[in-house]
Image (cartoon, rainbow, N blue to C red; front, side):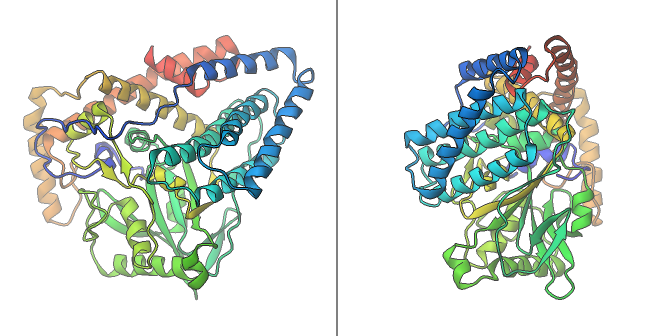
Length: 480
């Protein structure tokens, strides 16, 4: 998400059809329910073990830690060489091994570079397994999410306990070979057609990342083009204020982001085996259109109609022109409370293409991810605050506003419409009504207030326990 996103960012989760009133919220989606870990007892047990390892000294537990690491390695080798059904007990064991190994890493710092290399192997092995899974079914999709999200979450928890150590700035994935033009940026080779998935620092970015059935870590998708002759790298993306635009890769990376991940189409896809330049051709199609056509932002979030484009749709539409359908399953927002809040700010579509879900597309390999401890810390705290606010939505709390603010908001909306007609950007974006804007401001204020209180509580927790509060503790502190 861009730095300038404020109240406008709330509507990025889905589209606006009737933005000038709240109306009645949509009924619950009876066919679906949000994913839930339901493993609070395990999180508590892991924290207890972490405390014991720190108190007893890593040397005394070295044999046990080495045994756990060996067990995790053995499971990973089986994952790399065999094939498993999503319900296989070996995958349950792999998930438990991840939590155990990360707990030991958090308490007893080791070679972070070696850990990141192991993580890259694990992610690629899971992606390989998922190529044979039917991801339109919830059991398969849930298994893929559990494994990849667990790998990310456990590593990040371990890194955040080692903030005093120098953490590698990039977690490398698999170096996917390709025939497309490429450039090297910050030590990573990026190719034309690569997908850049990022997370903004605004409260609304956290809402986009966490508000779907599979809460994730990303809020924006962009597409990279590399010129075959000049090697100029251009990023194509859609923003709520201006629609589709292009920028240099340097401009893209210089903008405020908490994390950026590079995804690339797997080289073993049948389409790429026949047409290896497919990703570059997709990027060419997107860039050509962006340069020759004014493409408005797609508030409807209609992935089937590409007259307008939202951020995920830029990538989806580009690859669709080449016969590759990304996002094998649509993203869904089925939680009644979340739907009610989003409906009150104008959202009308709850089946879309979530940026975070692109990480779980088996057609894509994870090439690299940039992050640092400070950004991870803000990411986790924003997530905890957002999760607790959405719990309030489930309890029936609403996003209200002071009635006396509405006349002024209507004046601001009128001014925004005039600016839009003049080809400029107004304070309230096109498609968002004044009531929705005021409810968006209410959300931003609540997030800011709760964030400030969480900062204080988290600092007290660290002073008392002498380690940073893990994510489940951040959520508990935010609830308090």
